[in-house]
Image 1 (cartoon, helix red, strand yellow):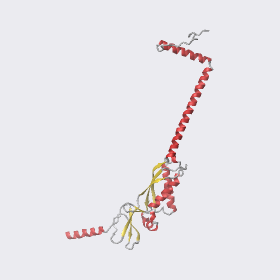
Image 2 (cartoon, rainbow, N blue to C red; image 1 turned 60 degrees about the vertical axis):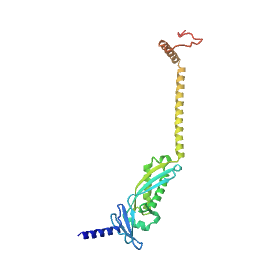
Image 3 (spheres, rainbow, N blue to C red; image 1 turned 120 degrees about the horizontal axis):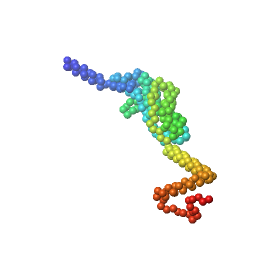
Image 4 (tube, one colour; image 1 turned 135 degrees about the horizontal axis):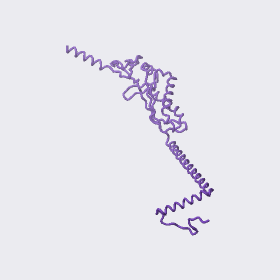
Length: 264
C-alpha cells in the first residue's frame, strides 16, 4: 500500500514538474515544438505541460502604464514643464491569440517578470497623443484645476482611437490618472508678477479714493463758517479739558494772541 502511494506521489511530482500554472489575471498560449502558436487560449488556473513545446503567459487584467515627463503645448502656446500620467487597461481574454499573432510585435512589451503585456507600447503611444490633443484646450495655469475633466478627455480620445482601429472589443480602458501637472517656471513667474501688479493698482486706487474723500471733507468745512467756528470751539474746549486734567504742561502763545474770549 505504501509503495502504491509512493508511486502515485512520484507520478504527481513528475507531472507537475513539466507543467506551468497560469496565474489569475493571466492567459496562456501554447507554442508547439514546431514553433507554431495554438489559437486556443489557456485559462487561469490551468497547468499546461511544458515538456513538449512551451507556454507563453500574458497579463490581461489591470495592465498599468506610467508615462512620465511629457511636455504638451497648452492653449496659451506655452510648453508644460512636466506632465505625468498613468493609464490602466484590460485585454479581452478571448482576444489574446489574435492580438499576439496578428499585431506588430513592437506593439507589445515584455515585463520584468517575463510576462508579455499585449498592446502595451501601442496604448502608451496613443495615450501620449491623447494628452497632447487634450492639453491644447487649456491654458497652462488652468490645466491643474481641470485635472478630472482632462482625464476624461484623454480617456475618451483613447476609446475613440481603439474604436477606429477596431480594437474596442479587445481592449478596455479602465482608468486614466494624471499624477503631475507642472507649468513652465516663466509662466508661474509671470502670473505672480501680474497678481502683484493688480494688488499694487488696487492699493493706489484706494489711496486716491481716500485722498479725494479727505479733500471733499476739507472743502465742505472751509465753505461752512459755522462748522469752522464749531471746530475752533471744540479745539478750545479740548485744550481747557487738558489743562484741567493736568495733561498740558505748557502752552505756546502767539504774539497776536488776544485771549480765548471772543472780542466783538
